[in-house]
Length: 220
Ligand code: DX5
Ligand code: ZN
Image (cartoon, rainbow, N blue to C red; front, side, top):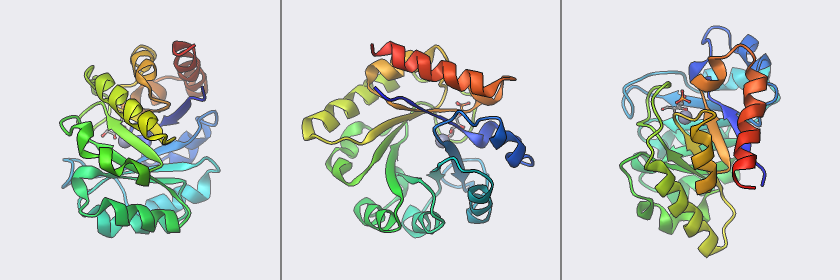
């Protein structure tokens, strides 16, 4: 099974993205956390920065929008031509319209749920999404511990997708390291966001390779 590792640049050096991007060339994509200080109690960057990021890397950008009023803002990120745009179920009023709009720009579209949002909330929407992001920490900050119950939610999403014959990716974000990635992979995740565990080591490409190997070996 193909396992994807996407380092989260929330743990990178915000004034040295170009230098830090060069250290994660083995990644399958770069996870870009956009936060507005309202949906989450933290603030990062917006479209201008994401546009520049597109220009300094050839890796696919996976944009995770932790912002209110996703209906209004999500299309603007897709217009930049990023690889994927993920919105939070809790932050949008018409997820199906958002999906259509994002796909019309050629980007993949994801739907995310916070730790306290049940999988049942998004089950009827799955056919409209290319990726389901199960948050395994409360969104907002890097370096938090993986919430073990997230594996149950990942398994529920896996079962729901399989029973509907859908092939959306299952992404997990928060507290992923060489230990927690095993249970997330066994539960059915195939796309792993890792911030502090990648950017906290000297040889980031070596860590990316190890994470991918551990994930792939967990399901053999
Ligand atoms: C948290 C962000 C994550 C964060 C993960 O709200 O969505 O992408 O960077 O960081 P780690 O891997 O350190 O938990
Ligand atoms: Zn994220």
